[in-house]
Image (cartoon, rainbow over all chains, first blue to last red; front, side):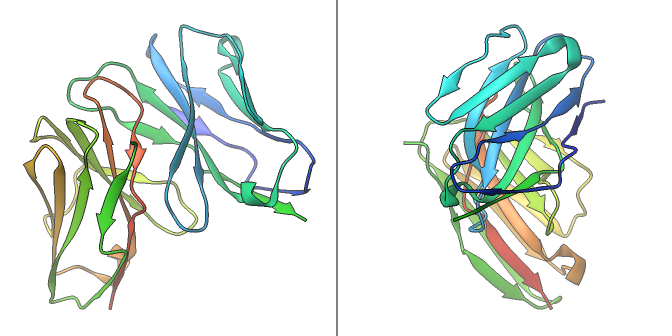
Length: 117
Length: 112
């Protein structure tokens, strides 16, 4: 069975500070995908990034960066120079790969990020 | 365009009512999903449609009845709901066999 754990339930920072969100996952699949989604108070889940299990290259996209470590089953996410608009709940999620029946997303419990001005 | 739309945004219904939630996407995705999200919890998968056929049902009670009339539309028919069914209902879509799911804004349901 797949499992995603986000140990941090809430993080509070002052604007312009960096925020790192931790995610640890469990899966028996050899090929899988990891995601970060953002859920602002409005409720919509916004897709942020996706990482394939076979590609451990870490990247930066704007103010977002991620650190995928297959050896420790971790997929951490960093927001650089946080802004008030970054205040939201962030979910880490895990998906099987290439399922014709549709892909089940397993979510972590979420981390609430509060960015204060 | 990565937009998934859902109507209504808010819904209040009694336990004897029948109502429907609607979801629409025009991204050419052939997999569509319904999730239920309770307050301060992550979304939980309810149903998956692949090529307009129900492919996954996560043991959801029969008072929830999904329908996929065509490749762009997904409905969730509600009947005889309980107050504990009050939640945010999220629709998502993806290409079949492709993993990124795009979510709609959700319908906030309150059952009285």
